[in-house]
Image 1: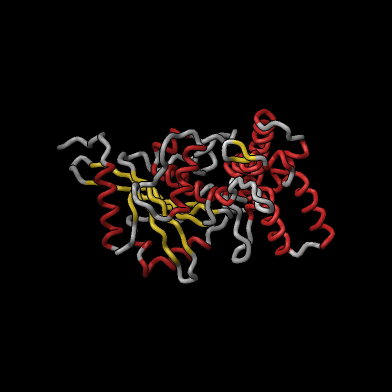
Image 2 (image 1 turned 45 degrees about the vertical axis):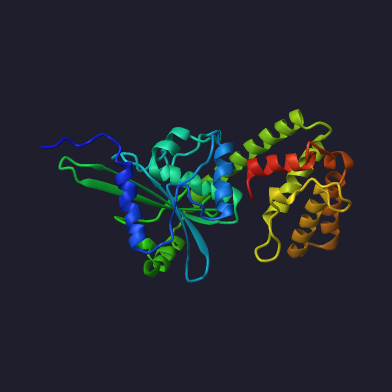
Length: 330
C-alpha cells in the first residue's frame, strides 16, 4: 500500500478549487490578477505595514453581490498539507495577532484560514468594505493516492472586530454559486456573538487602539518637529473624523486626496477641514458644538509650518498617512 505523501499538494488543491469556481461560472481572479484598485492597493499596503515585503495577494479572489446589491469580497487561500487549515487560540478564535497586537506571521503564512482572515483585515483597514468572506482550503493525498481536502469558511467584518466567525461546514464552494449565494449571506447575517464575546472583543480592540495611539504619539513626537502635545491629539482626532465618511453622502478622505499643494484654499489642511465640515454637517450637531470642533481643529490644520511642502510632501500629509496606516479607517 502506498504511503501517504508529506509533500505539499497545494497546486492540486488550487486546481481542484479553481475548477469548481470555473464550473460555477464565477469571475474569479488569481493571485497576480487585479480584482479592483481599492482592494489591490489595500492588500499591498497592509502587507508592507505588517512587516512583510512586496505584495500580499490571496490565491484567488472574487467580488460577489447579493440580492440587496451589497458587494462581498471573497478571499481564498490554499495550502497543501493535512493539518494546515486553521490555527486557533485558546478562545477558539483565529490566532493571527499577539497580545501586543503584532501579527503572528508564522500562522498567517502557514495556515489557509489564517492567511485568508489576514487578507480580509487588510480590506477592513484600508477599504470601504465592511463584510468579507475568508475561505481557506487545504488537503493531502491519502495512502491510496486520493486527494482528501478540508475547507474553512469565515465571516470577517467590522461587527465582529475582524476576528472571523466560522460560518458552517462545507465540502466544496457551491455556496458561492449565484443561485446559492443569497441563502449563504442570510446564514452569515444570522451569526451571533454572545455579549461576553462582544465585551471581550471590545476590550481587546480598545487595548489595540490604545497601543496604536501610544506608538503614534511617540513616533510623531520623535520624528515630527514643531508639534506640541495638543497638536498631536488634534491631528489624530482630525484624521479619524476625516476618514469616517457618511455612506452615500460624504466619502472618507483617502491618503491620495492630499496633494501637498501650495495653492491658496487647497492645502492639505484646507482639504481636511472641508472634509470634517462635510462630515459634521451630516451629523446634525448643535451649531455651537460643531463650530467649536471645527475652530479647535482648524487652528492646527491650517498653520503654515504643517502645510509647508518639502520634497513634494507636507508634514500634515506625512502625519495623516502615519495615522491612517496605523489606525486604519474607523
